[in-house]
Length: 268
Length: 168
Image (cartoon, rainbow over all chains, first blue to last red; front, side):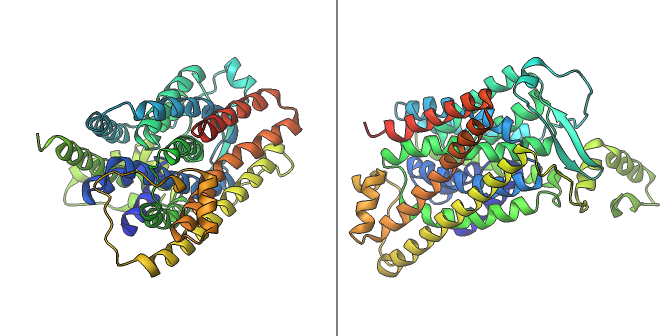
């Protein structure tokens, strides 16, 4: 379990997806843990991943603080809605939704993303909220700005609901919103996602703590594994072949999601 | 360019051609240059955003370290006493009330319960991103940056609603 958590932290930090997307299937399908305990443990892992990774990404100049905080409004409100819905929804339905989200995440991870920087004029909202910045590249600092802010904000709200509902950081949707809709550089999207998922997860964690989902015995090995994994993942961001990682990650997600559906519906 | 670009397969021109096309793909070029170490970039150290970044970076770092240290301590103490007992997580029972609220956790720690120490570490972990938003909120008030005072204020109220609202 420790090794799995270490891997989750590493992958979560590197891809901006948070460790939860690995932790929940790992605990439910490999260790047979009840999904509610698994969600509680995964929230812990997501917060640990986010804190450890974001600390490094801020220092390196990748994560955009203002953008992250603005989008947190959407994810926070979404997470509250999601966490409130979670207790009204059956476990089988929850498992099915999670499986679909995993498959969709796997699909998204394979989508090519353009890194082209255009010189369009700034949109009014972007200017007002100062949603632009620079990030380090081999050619020095590269400047960028956010586009389609309202649409990105809307997609972030959905990401928030999913993370409250399923205990995963739903980083895939956040990266999608920033990368595809708001047209930010890929590394800015993943690192800013890492930065924001901690707050989203903290919102859900408060609710789940009160409901008794967060178990110390289960969360302990998860957290102790995720933490060093996330540090290593954040340090490795510059030097890892993300293309290879993406393929591995997608395959893992597809396998895990099928296994989860089988576990939930196989006995019927 | 990295060494891959020099890899040529003379026997199969088709493969070499495919490889060169693949290597010129913007994504691959971006990934390969990302493997190089680049010089420490220059940031304006006097800019307020840079200062906020350093504050938040340190806050997150020490917060997660502290939380991990407490969890590790509690975990070791717990395993020393209960390590051999079988655990069942297949069936959801929910945690005892004492592990469900910050006050309850503190009571558990004070009464010497080892799982309580682990849970306290987890509370510190949850508190770290909350504190991060709070620090940003204060920072933006000092900067008189009204839009971001409102934005971080909204996030804080969401956090407070969920963290406190669960108990009332």
